[in-house]
Length: 449
Image (tube, rainbow, N blue to C red; front, side, top):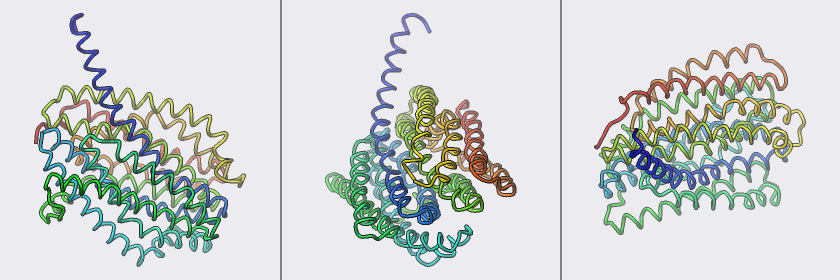
């Protein structure tokens, strides 16, 4: 680079940073607001009983697995809409998002029916105590009625973000999270409904969020004279394109489920602490994932516009932001680990186990920041096939470590710390290696249509 090129390069970098922040900051607020539903539930239910908290942990594992497996509704939609938007095909972008919303409602309805029928045997496979199983069944059966709304929110959010608007999802997510707090307090403690009140309050807020997003999309479609009825061929295309993302997410969730199974074997205290640690991890992950969302939207947009140079610039800046953001989160989490456990639960044993898991997370965050941003870039590029392949292989590589912890079964905080090292730290390291190798090539870039 010559001296005369320096101002131009600096200006380009500032433009990329502005684009990233314009999408990442609102997405950060929206993503942090989403797990506040579970955070509030966990905090309130911890004061009902440790048994209820353990039951919430089991039920939420099933629910978050379903929602996680359906994350293609957001990620695939964001990438497809952003690519069409970048190529100047706005009507196609909106139509693709509408079809994704219909698919989300359909998948949510089918999943609801499946959980009502198979919820009890599914939870029983984790091997919980009878009391924990009873609490988990109550929460799962009620919360299942919110699944169509949860999935519709994912698809609608993918459409809006693909159109480079991250503010509306922020407003909806924050509004839902704030409404959830007093509503759950009244239902859980005021009406003495316990874990059932927690589930009822959450699904009310979820349907309210879905209604707001779907109404906004319907008004935009009506203005542009875009049909709101589902198109069968487009629904099939959306589903087909989502298969690799589904497989990729299946690998991720397999690791989460394996960790929960092992935590259940370690005991009710460890399971309760594992649930709280998972909640903290969700908050941290989604906070870092705000950069990944910016990566998805911008990568899809600039690849659609056949601008690989800007895609490379976005990728480089996101890697820097991801590692730096992860390091900042590590410091904050280390400080919070001495305060957070007492805020969550009065049970001293649960507090000690939770703190051990949080210290493992402190080590993981810089790596996680790197992983999340590259994951977002490759999603935005439509490189889901590669993500599916390596995700499945890495999941298989992690399972033996989880099995070893289950066989060893160390007592107390050591057991939970070893479980999080095997199923979280090692998982992130392997993903960082596979994603880093991929972005060093040009194989993932598909320009234009």
